[in-house]
Image 1 (cartoon, helix red, strand yellow):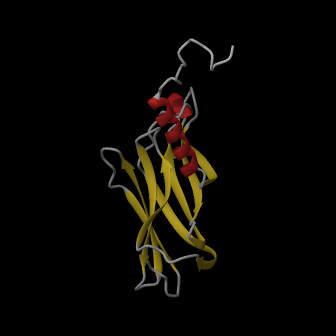
Image 2 (image 1 turned 135 degrees about the vertical axis):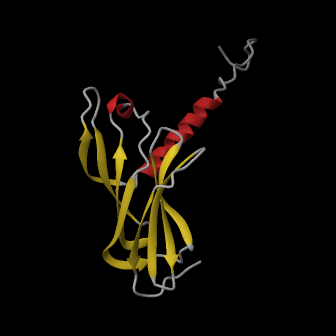
Length: 170
């Protein structure tokens, strides 16, 4: 039947704003977690059903500073909730950033900038890595901490990478 000549009212697409919001959230989670490279893991607690609780070690290359990689170890919750992605990982994390090649700064850096983020729960908790430029000491300071929609954690870890030359700052 020709839709122009039809006497039936046209149907509009069903409105499901929550579906669109979930799709956008999933896309953002995938985009932010794609930068970590899993290097290894160790089991800390045996779970009869689902994966064990673990400590995982990931590597993050600084996107604006070539030659610097941050290595982060953090807790990963297992069990049934961990297997389906509903668990909230603990806030415990450790960071060590190292020079892994010649350091090349691609552009002037902000004095402080979030450079990485990894989710620790399905929606509300994430692990952050912030770079702070210490121009006086010609060093890059990296700090990791977790935050939550309502309340973050004071647990944090810090490391520094000496650059040995002036750092361009915005």
